[in-house]
Length: 481
Image 1 (cartoon, rainbow, N blue to C red):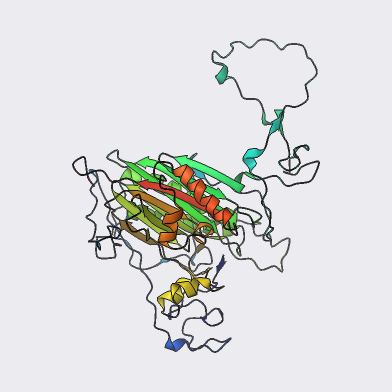
Image 2 (tube, rainbow, N blue to C red):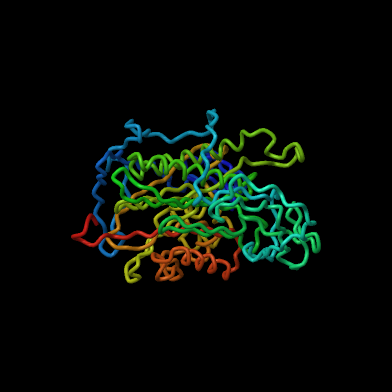
């Protein structure tokens, strides 16, 4: 994934459509190839879509009308609903700026157990290779050599009544065998003392379940580390009804510390949602605030002293840590999505005879070409510049433009929240529907594993992360639908 280094100019393009040269606002011709930019239609910036604050009892707004045969809601736009934040204040009508001084954020709250946001241990900045390290779950452990016999220790004052309550043995009491040669022991640096093979890191493959939602992330077959991160959580609204949420982030490989950026964003967004939803913030507004919180967390990484590696290589160009984000909330019959970048959310109904829908629009060069009418979607995404993103979270993103939308399906299905490591192999909604298992709503972890396997079978050229969040419609007569 690459990112444009310029803010979006007035003509709507961050880069020249002819040669991908970065453009400045007001440019009439490309300075590199001479492309005439004045002939392009001006693209309007998509505003954020405000929502209402809710109070107990929970009452969601009616959904806009829908087209027959399609997902049963349309996106809410400004003016459709009164916009207030969780504090009751009017939402800002201007874009949120992040290029000015940013106050130092409070230390992030610890992520809940369901959030897979642990930082990777690698510090490399590039380089791919063909073979992936073995699955860390295949590692076996051996008992250490028997310790010399010692005099029995004095009996404790009171032995635990339950053997399970006894203290667990220290981690040093067992040593892992190499997953490659199955003979050498692994040293503290994570390398086999026998064959030198680097052992899989925890973040190479992660799986989490939170209520009926689940997510899986895998390093893939080409990258040397996993720069994706995710969080899946379950909480309750003020009236006691359940809410499921999923956050997926993709680190920008051309930036510094992309794995840290995605981890920080996923943890911050998850914590923000878990704090906002139980106190009655409307889910769409909560998603907006979560994206802003995620952006602030990523911005703070650029402010940490001694973390950019410049003291080791002062001549090397460094971009601020950056990542994309996409999230979904399922709560009381409402489906909310929010995103910045090119990670996506799809709606796949249980009844595959019903239309599947892509719920997000990419912040990317390809999407801009399609929006400007210069290419069709197939041509744009076949171009080598297709994945150059025009929106991301990071200190050098200039402007933060969170996109949020709400939907109210009238039939059950599953929300697929994923990075481009998956959708590269199932790009269209129909393609995604074909690879999502029919029982994904009942077995979301298995479904996410199948989707990751589909991307690996396709080549696994990127990190792969997917979260599945079931959406169940209550039958008429038994509650709200």
